[in-house]
Each structure stands twice: as C-alpha cells, then as structure tokens.
Length: 219
Image (tube, rainbow, N blue to C red; front, side, top):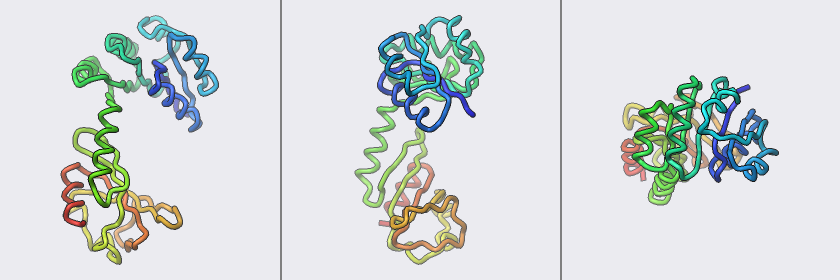
C-alpha cells in the first residue's frame, strides 16, 4: 500500500489527509500545533507533533521512505521553502507542495519540488471554464495548458461512432470515458465502434485551446 505524508495541517492539509485516510491510504500527518494534531488523529495512521523546519526531525520520522510527501504549511513561504529543501536533501521519493504565489512556485521548482499546486488559481480556472461553456458540466485544470472536461454529448454527435468523429485527429482531444446519465455506468477508454447516445456524458482530455475550439464548433 502506498504511504503518504502531509506536512502542515491548515484547512487544505487537514482535508487532504482526511480524504486520503477515507480512501484507505496510510497517512502520516505532521504539524507543530498540538490542537491540529488532536483534530487529525482519528483521520490518519500517525499524527505527529513536530517542527517541519528541523531536518533531523523529518529524517527521524522516516519521510524518505514515504511514497509522496505533501507540503502545505499555511501562509509562511519561508517555512514551506525550508521544509521542501530538507525533504529534497533527505531523498524523498516525491514532493508535492502547495504554493502561495507565482514567485513561490518558481522557488519551489528550483529547489526540487516534483510538483507545485496552486489550489486557489486552479479552482478559479475550473469554475470559469464551467460557467462560461454551455455544454460543459465540470472542468478540471491540469496545468498551464491541459484540462479534463466532463460535458454533454453534442447533438450533432448522437448516433455516430467515435471512429466517425475522429476527435483525436480533428481536434487533438481524447475521449477517456463515457458516462450514462441514466444508469450512472461508465465506459473507460471506449472503443472506436462505440455509438454515442443522448444520455451520454463525455469525459475528454486535451489542450485548453483544442477543447475550446471543440466546444465552439459543436454547440
């Protein structure tokens, strides 16, 4: 089983650790606030009161053996940077860090964070995409250029096979799943012969520009 660690138990870190625990994962939760440790103890495998800016402490906890370490240390950019630096020096397998700004992101990437997330920005982008596109039900921003989008099947597609539509070549997008609105069943990586019907929800992935063009041309 994969093992995760969450360093910093503000709102983001708390709910991340709690959700990973609910999904049956082994989670080490770390913070220097005893009240936060008390709050997370029932939603983690281990809840450790510790100073994440102490390299020896991080080493003693054994974070280099954890599959993924998440760093979410609140509004202190210096603490986030120092913690990430020490985790990298310890040889942690994968370090994912919550950034506070574009400048913070650049610094974290330079000191070796494997992935930097900016939840507020990502949420804003996703919401903007969802409310401005007529057929889009939900949109998940994957980075600067890519998204995964859940959308209603365009009327012009109903009754046609994916092979006929040739979306990969025409729009450079990929249908990764199709969900039936009535039964709730999903078809993961549907075959080229799949014939679309009115109750289908398409889940597609691609570059944002290509998805936007696809949406505009199939309204």
